[in-house]
Length: 123
Image (cartoon, rainbow, N blue to C red; front, side):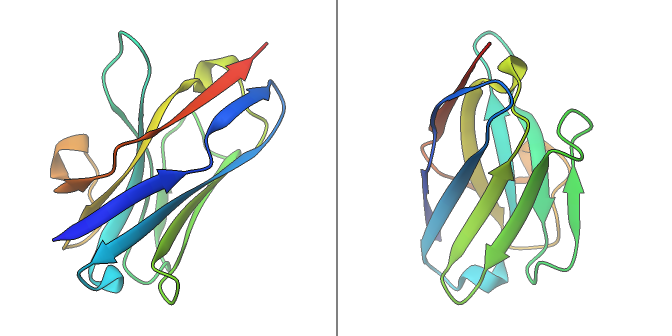
């Protein structure tokens, strides 16, 4: 299996930017499609962005389209999420997740999860 560790979260003002990273170890990183998901207090976990094994195909949730960019570097075994124009409603714990098949389009399709990193956006 693959182990995932997120980093890069923090406190930022509305309109600011953050870049999250997710380091992978264990099995071959390029064998996995990856996703970023988030969960705010009292809300269900939400799929934010997904990327296929090569990085050639990505999808985004409607709430982050045009503001967030998912990418990966298979040579560094790392997944990224560039978050721009952040809003208070983006406040959540952010998780990276992996699945050893094509892109997963629902939360439940991901098999492996990191521990999460907190993003807080102040107004």
